[in-house]
Image (cartoon, rainbow, N blue to C red; front, side, top):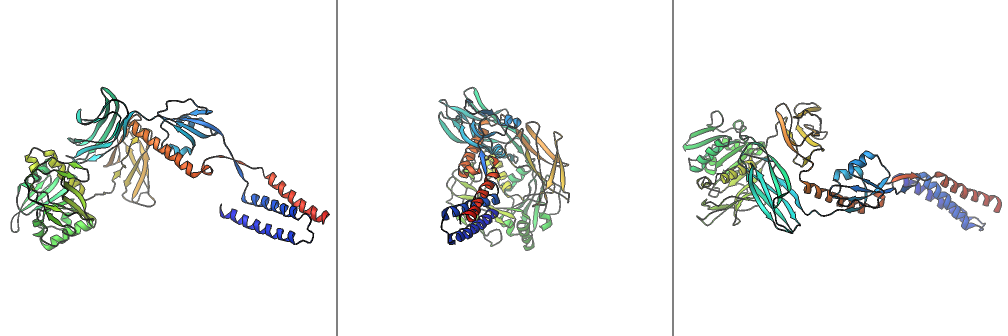
Length: 573
């Protein structure tokens, strides 16, 4: 009830009370009941006319919405459509629907706003219900595909990750079981790639779904290494950074105020003194505690300013508790670990990856704190690497020593996974002007792909072009002025590139037959939730076809009541 209706009801109630009171006070008591009833009818009719004409619902016909996965389309419904044929038909008489099959997507339901009287579907026998993976990786990283798979048949099935024309990983799905899975593969390339996640029943291929991902070009993370003395750890790290295309500078102290400098994939420049401007050219500063303690106070101030104000990542290696109270030591507490020579299994906490066992001579661990993000632990529950926010940057401390033992043990992938993981977690986040981003998602042929641009200049719109020649216009965000937003509709499945000038983004567009059970269960869930919301809304919130009530009935009722009151006073008083 809105304010207008409330005012009309209040006014007519006041009028009714006034006239009813006047009639009750009249000396002539004959016909008093009929007079008050007539006043009531006149007041009600005027109130309804004042609030607007009442409407009543036309029920309409019941339609059968046939969706993907429908087995039986026999129904008493008078009309039968698919979503596409219904849109093309222009039929507006169907107001209630019986849905058969997996149902409609959230977007389709929001567009139609149907009243659904029933949802009939048959549970699939086997498939991959959900899946996710990193859509962008660094060189040397590890691809992880995880999700949920079900097998309601009487035979065991195999779930396999295929890539580089070979089997990378697999798992058995027992008969009549549902399991969560995680499959892994080492990355051996740079650029685009499409693996496939296959569900097999013996030799029969049940599903064959693309798993696209990008491996970023090496060298995007710029590293400055400060070593207090030469050792094998820095020697192996320097070689690995160079082999994997990182831009790095290594400064090793050989004696007091004397340094050995190595420049990896970049030109040499003076590095005798650290400054804010010099540190601008790096994303990560990696040092041991002694090296950081030995630099001058103004150099420490420059490091602190870069980390706190400009987002430089600081990675500290230590095998002893911090000896100096400095900005980088706050929040980190340590505990001794019983010296051991046995094999240590390191666990990358953010990805749950376990690295191969190796002897790392671990003597120190970090005490967990609420303000620390746990990065690396071991099977015994010790925290070996953790990170803390400091202004706009992060400070990470690692107590792992002699990680080069992975290299010596013939485990270069584990060594690469460890260092890639730490550097990615820590590196300064760059948001250059003109950056084009596409949110991660399952984009399908026939749908739109959203694009965001970090704008340069004051232009109100920007123009992007895809590799198909599609021109995409973007408009400035009214709330965040430096962002531009747009959408494009791809013409074919597979990898798509969209950009302007040197800036570009890539996205994979899935075909209509890819990931069928993921799509099916999204539609089932959306349709069930719509029916649930529909029940909570009640009938008044459901769509209906309005038909106005004839106002002559209300006018006639008012005239009849007023005529009776006039005639009673004129002829019967």
